[in-house]
Length: 94
Image (cartoon, rainbow, N blue to C red; front, top):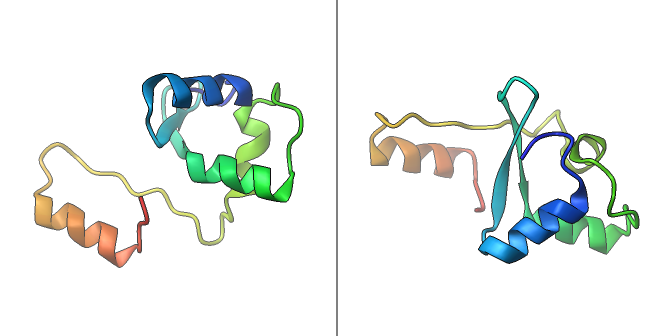
């Protein structure tokens, strides 16, 4: 999905294909973040957004603390133990 995708469309995608997270890319297809069902639960719990027509670019900054949020990536050539080490060292919860 891209930064201009509206929240309502993200909800439809989650429901239709039953996944827990989606990569978010900018106009040049560079990875900018990951939007998850946990993010939606946070928005619902805090009642942050009642308007579902809001684009993700307006939401992402409010849900991720950029002082601590760091996107981790991997390559097809990475070994499984390296990936697991990244998950453990960064305390990934997905």
